[in-house]
Image 1 (tube, rainbow, N blue to C red):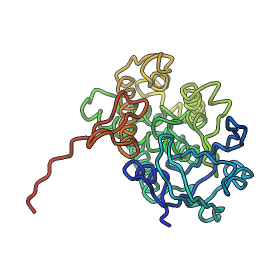
Image 2: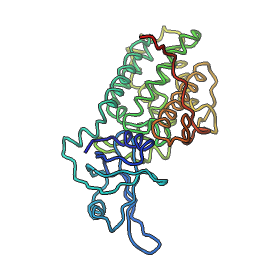
Image 3: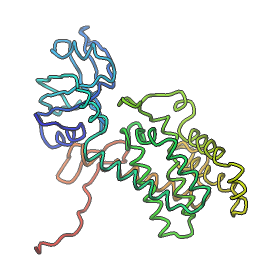
Image 4: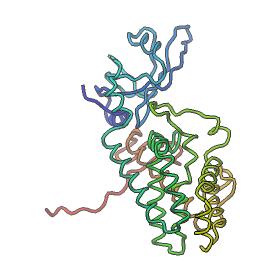
Length: 345
């Protein structure tokens, strides 16, 4: 039986009525429920690094006892004839077995394509950081990457709408940094060092708001994430690192620089505080500098294009070129116009 990722399974079911497939997953949610007649069943969520599916497991099914007894984050190979229903994918003729340690390690690392994508994005991040000329911001970025690489590379950029997967924060951050760098080419009045640093750190608080344990696909809820939120946490992270790098030797080296270090720190904090664009979207302050406006739009653009990519992959087709709306996009999604090609060989 062919091995699918959850994402490839959902993509296939968008155009096919049924698929015979195996998926390597973790049990990331399990809620016991009862029918109106009092019969028990499970609402189970199965996840890999690229997505999740929810299934109902009725008491009469042979795999009910094993899933009912399994702890959260138990890893399985699930094989079934998958059919698309109005309520989502429904497995028939299902069988499951525990993953071997090697299979589980591979599942946590993601598909070959996802691993390659995230590695390239990590290299983009480190390369763009190496081009920052302001020694204060360069030191801040390198210190951040050294201290938080592992946590950063396994965090998500969101819980549902975009890059909501293990490693998604690296993908989103790289996209925002690429866009920020391109904007500086078009608008050379922008402070490139400041904008790139803001792009790197704007969502760093999501390492606690949207974090994964080292060997789990469950995005934990933490007191820090829930009580403070990623913008507040990001400001705290930047202030903490800034304090640690401002040694006496560096202060003496940086004092002659203009603008003053305290102004650099303040403008960077403003980028983090304002990157959602307005109070209604969660920013405590709206953008008030050119770099803050640029970061807000770069952040929003990368998120929106990822939402559309996901819609093209998994939303049901309504016609030849239209797919069903996927929240929070404002309407149904139309296929993009292909690039021009020639029939000449």
